[in-house]
Length: 193
Length: 399
Image (cartoon, rainbow over all chains, first blue to last red; front, side):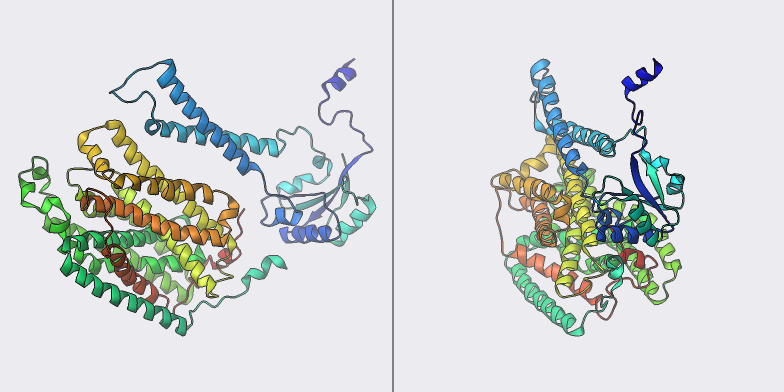
């Protein structure tokens, strides 16, 4: 009973196939070692990879072949939406819904609306940036296979990890393990999904 | 490894031939334009003083932009900007030229400023301002402002030059100590100068944010000039490894940000006056909308803000050196249009009336500033070679 209810909820990670693997993770001493391992792996033909480090490393996105984040465009669209919303708000409240002449000024004019247009552009843009960042990072994520790695905590301290993922077309657990060790990995492990 | 080859060394010294060639061109420009201005002075003195004031305010504000930015780099402890900072400092070093070049403004107070006229004493509003707006105090205030800027500029320049020798951190710390009060002094004194030199052209009008408006334009034109100078040196084969795409990207971000800052200040000033709708305030804009001047606002609204704002917004355009170079030149022109529009309607109230002295005065003042700037590049390193953050800057990479 309880089992089927849990199955119906289909929480992430529940009922996963234990025979499946997430990746082979290698463990490196320095950011330079990690970058070198990524470049060697790319040259060797691996493409589905993820790096884990305690701080951002310049050049790691390029090395992994990550495309530019589309977040900037998300923010631009949200900002323009905010701009349009502000014009509508100012015009509809001032010139349509509740006409009130103040000091003989026009019911709607661009000049006094600009601060609202500016503020709502910034506000919507900021919402777009924060929520878009969450969405692009797939947050919140309640379960991630990375934590099945026995030394995953090192990525928050002083270790630089490289996961060659099982979805990679060239993935072969034995080969990848040998490969990462040849790159200088200190602790290589096949990690469950 | 691809990532560490940026330590490839650049030649930090200009070749003497190039230096002399540019110096000779500048000397020629200076002589020709000052002689021409001499004739202009004899021919139409009032036009001379107005044309000259625009040129003087242009380069004075640009050099203050440099002073502002050098202090910002010290206060923020910036590493990204180290390789461009010596060029900033060389522009900043031109600040004291104003002590000499302000003289034609002092000599032209009667042609320029209504408050010097006898009738001002009878004017109910101006009569009350004469205690402040009079020729003696105008000169004294001008000298105090330029003196303070010169003190800061020369001090910061000499600290940076001394560091070239031994790379001691002492100079970095000292520059930080000078920059914090320096920033306060700069904004207060530049506001005072902007009120005197430009705002008092309409003596019954006032705007408390006029000083920031003046500095915003100056900072923008300075950033444009810095980018143009870096690109010119690059095209001559200098600093190609020291000022890379990553650094231009950051300079481009500043250029972009400053178009917004200028627009924010310029518009805020306009909007508050529009909303207040008081005759003694709206008169400033009325004067600048009369006749063909009314078309000028579109140059500023679109040319000074919307076009550069949206073009410089994407990352790719800030990293496109041709586009960035074009907008650097464009913003230098726009700053001129902005100051021209602030000053000239006082002389030509009926509409835009171009005069040959407008560009010639700009060249005359500009060539004097450029000569002082150029003298700083003679046999001296183009980057602060002793700065402790230099290596960090050479390896700089945008996130």
